[in-house]
Image (cartoon, rainbow, N blue to C red; front, side):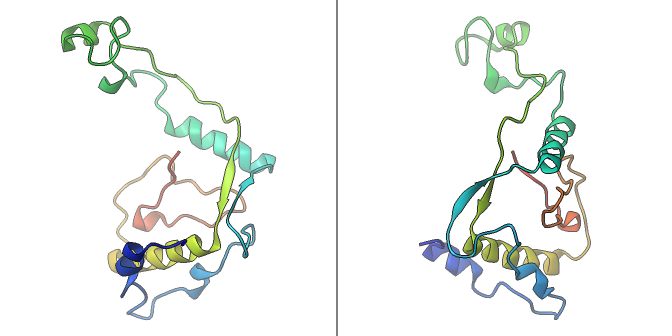
Length: 153
């Protein structure tokens, strides 16, 4: 099943209540297959360049170490914090996009669009974050920045 029983329960009652629902949000994007779920390779050079730009703008190139990286000498959880802080394991300073795929799943998109609309209706136009990864991609459904919608990598 594309939607679990728990997901169906969670979506009960979700939807337009004030008449502000934009029915075009539930339309399936033209790049999506209507009949089956599939991962579709992204080949459009403009989209790939925009995705690389998103990676570049959303990655902190220096002083980006986190504790889960551990110690360069002893690995994770292999020594005291003072040793870890002196010998931080290196992390990438940049990411290069090698391949991109679009999740083409019309049923999942409809559920997402319905939930997205309900969130927009509930919070109104109160943007709280300015995420670096909230940029739109060419030919893609625009993100709703006013409800803090942004991309995950």
